Each structure stands twice: as C-alpha cells, then as structure tokens.
Length: 166
Image (cartoon, rainbow, N blue to C red; front, side, top):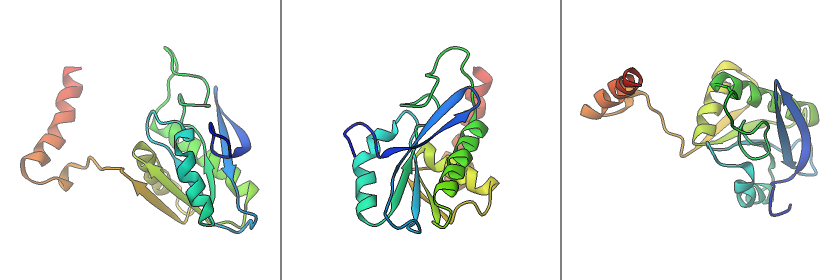
C-alpha cells in the first residue's frame, strides 16, 4: 500500500456523470469478511490508509472509495454539479455490487465515519440483506426525540427555523 491511497484499484464504477474509484486491500482467503469503509464528509479515502492497514492486519479485506466530489471521485464540486443523499446511497449500492461480484462468498459489512455512518444506515434500511452489519464511528443522530429537555425542542425546531430563514 502506498502513501496516497488505501489499496489497489478493484474497479472504476460509472455513476451517471460521476466515476468512483473502488480500491481494495484483500486477504488471500476470498471468504474473509469484507469491510466497506464509508468516509466522512470532506474526508478522502486516503485519510484512512493507516486504519485500513490495521483492519487488514486483523484478517479483514477492506474496500474504500471516495464519496462524490471528494478525492478520486469525479467530477469535482462545481456550480451545476448536483447530487443528493439518494445518489450517495446508490453509489454505496454500486460499490457493494463490485464487492459481491469480486468476492461472492465473503460476508460484507459497512463501516461508516460521520456522514458515512448515516449513509451506511440509510443504505442498509433501504436495501435489506445486502450487508451483514454496520459499524458506526462518530456518527450521530439528529432525531429530536433522542435529546433531553430544551435540546429536544432546539433540535426539532432549529433546522426548520434555519430553512425558513434561508
């Protein structure tokens, strides 16, 4: 593994006008569990290279890709480049297709950091059975009912206020 990217290129996935580079650090055993690492917003996959190496050293195959508009994904952010949560969830599903094709016998897990965790949970809820589990790292919930007292009201009405003012 080099200093810039975690793993070797497994595939390049066209996703509409975008392209995702899927990289992998694989175990010799094709039935080893596979972790699909979903990065945080604004964090390129190469940031996790040391973590990927540690997961690999513990017997896991690890697959990474950059979310749209980050790192190796194309196109770069610019006026007119539009995508939403559903597009990101579809990208996760396309990468799982690549993993499933390359390693059909390997159990698949999602490991999401921050926004990556949210995407992992949304993907798993909308595509049951594609993965065996989801691991969340620093991935919070903004569900208002999970907050105590005045924070509950702030979390419920604050975003609505900001949206109305915007």
